[in-house]
Length: 85
Image 1 (tube, rainbow, N blue to C red):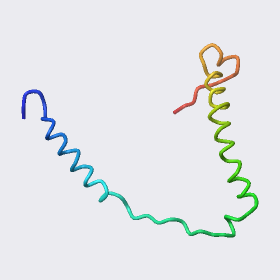
Image 2 (cartoon, one colour):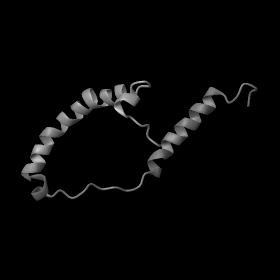
Image 3 (spheres, rainbow, N blue to C red):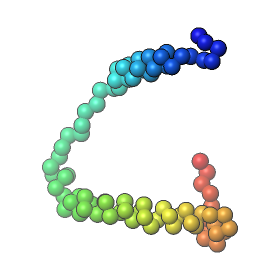
Image 4 (cartoon, helix red, strand yellow):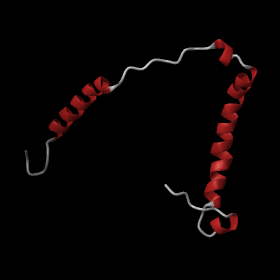
């Protein structure tokens, strides 16, 4: 080992070995069984159409509004309290 740390070739070999072993760490999975009676429910069909609208509203309106309402100085006006993580 050189005084400046591991050589780049050694690092590349280590990363390649880790990536080669990564698929062996995955557990077996399978998809859920498809139930056409649940998938064809009228409310489910409406949900398929409205879900992207909700995601767009969340990303373009609600998250920025929450960010603005949580800024220091403005948070007291809106009654925002920090989350306990």
